[in-house]
Image 1 (cartoon, helix red, strand yellow):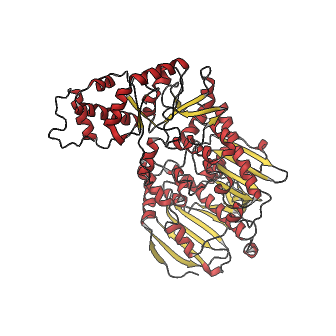
Image 2 (cartoon, helix red, strand yellow):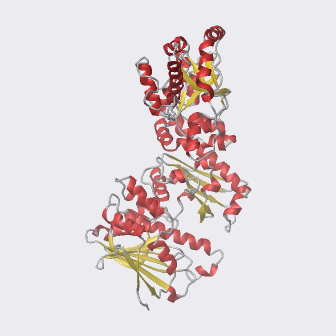
Image 3 (cartoon, one colour):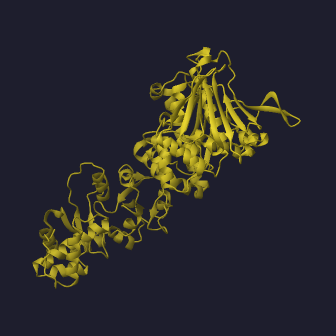
Length: 635
């Protein structure tokens, strides 16, 4: 029994995805089967969970399964599940509109990466549409669990911008997706081909995947299971090969790359649970939005999928980890609110955190090349743990990597242990500098004295580094110090020489204070400079100037704070200022000393044009009249 057919248009973004899928995304077209099986498995999981409250929904058919069938003459491939099913509104929401922001983000990613292909599709929650890579028409018939036989609905589309809906009578709950295959996709009508794809992509699915048994090369009415049909994490490690773990990861994460590492553990005692945790090789497309919407760690309770519980089972700084946790002890009706207040969950979270950090420790020590790949993808996220997890701060600090004045190039390869191993005799401080970029950090004049003494300095240029360093004040008994903050201690001989230099330069210091006024909070003779004429420094606990700029640009209110200008009185520019009798030229020189220091620190000058004019006047020795015909204010 059917009723009149209703025709609707796809939402604009869905139509765009369909167009891209059918015309562009061909590198791994066989993933359509993985995606359809994954959706069918989710439907079975949802029914198993919802049947806790509605046991009658499974009374008619309690063995959940996924069936794949072929009709070579009709050129159709069907994937059927007896899971939760969908009603009319759910079919429209899931297949005809944007149920989440996934479709829109998919389009944005493709716009940013012209080389994008079907490897991406599962990451965006739009995996169903991959069916149109191999089919010119797709129909979906579904009846929701608990609904009457006459409440079934059929959705159908050729992927050209419209779809139809009609009510149908279906004798059983569940969903059947039927693909009418394109002429050049006959390989997917081969029984052996589908079996090999199930083995490759979906063997771990925890429900039986069945296909008709063949006798003398012909299909029969008898079904046979073509996957292992057991949750991979429940199987003994001795039975599993690396390939098994890798294939499960790819299905779980919709990633076509192998993971860098994984850890599979069973905990028994006061609390029983199994965890299988992975470290990916690269970040998914929307990873940096992940603090608000974390996904990737699935919670099962006695093999029943409950929810994606990454927020409850891992700290935010480990949100890159993927995997499953299967508990024997939590109640099946657990909610997110209960998870947030449950001691058992806290213990599971602590154990998962330890496992991931152990995995990273092992990766860093045994496979440094793989760890470098991890660090490039997720290093800035791991740094968040320095501030957020005081209990594991020392462990996380051991995993940090930085560029350094002692290393070649900008690659962050130096650990804090490496640094300590190279410290000079008697050195008790780990020196570092933060800046907008590696080049700004490496070229900072603040490094000159330490570089001259052969003291290594860590070069930090991630946006998060200045914030992180505020929490990382000590490691392995060594203090961490920013080279541009506070005073730098000198040995006795150098201290005496510095006092003499301060006395000799007292006149030029006083003149600079007068010329610069409130642009600076103080002017001092520097212990840091050996080659440059000037640099900016801050008090030991002040926020770095580049971080102040970032926060200000982000809309944060930042109180005005003038820096300290340190000078090198032996530099020719300071000698020239000291002997300059023309007040206008002295003002130019003073401002140039400040602006040079600001530029070296990475700041954008308030008035670049005035800086250029001032520089020209100084270069030309004052031949250009100060401010003549420019209207320049001198600021």
